[in-house]
Image (cartoon, rainbow, N blue to C red; front, top):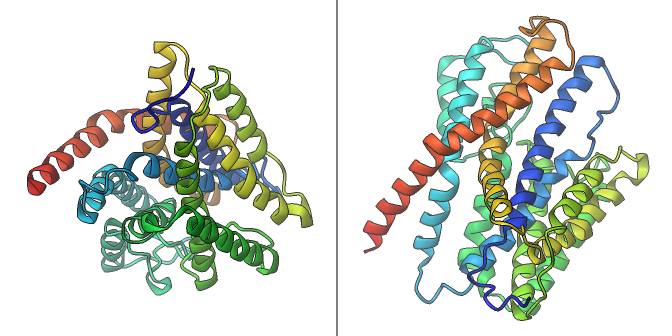
Length: 373
């Protein structure tokens, strides 16, 4: 079956893969805490952090698919308002949950020093406006860009990528877009190989080199997704069967579960980001969910993925705090604690999607639509 309406088609398999990526980030952070508790040198889901790169490639693909052909009837302001309505409700929810968890931990940095109330309020305001926290104002003492809810760092780069797309990247020819992706790939390769960590796991910290690495990840991932959307749209493609989702899901989980690989680590990470993830997005765009039940399931998984990504990490802070203080409410460290937290995060994500994200998004879209009119 030929896809003759790529502009209007909904890619349900990509929804499902977005959910797998969000679950991968949750597993990565849970195993990170588990490794901290056990004193292990390496956690058991070592490359789960690369799911963020998959998110950004996928986001570029979806944005390019949804908006590339709408600029004759849409302004930059319209686009930014649409992205704000889509992204910011869960930013607010994540910051609020992060604040509650921080207060529950005694309003202290990891070294035990008390944090002044004014500093906490500044951290809240900065996070709500997606402004990275300066190192002197870091309320946790871990150099995070958004110490109340660490994963907000990738939303910062999502916003930057969206803004650059609206004012500049969308105007590039396909050839110029390829050159941008190639230049970013070279820069990412250099910082990965010659950087101090032997990895491309940058972006989460306010330290200058870490922020630079985050920008380089975004400059490759997001434009790569835009390029994939443009190339995908230029040719008619045969859609594939419902087998695509399970195959892609297994491949993604397998890629992210590979151990550190020592000196080969950075090469493997670059392979995942530059080859494997774009290929998974392309293959996922060719797939379909099969039945109506499959389509609804994929849609639900995709809708839950963003809330899950945005609210899970404050509970990881609590988990690590329990381990440090020896006050785990679930008793001694065991499998029951991460499993309970995972279930809690998934259930809370689904609940927030229904009672907060969807209503808030609808309200903002309606408000912005009236303003545009």
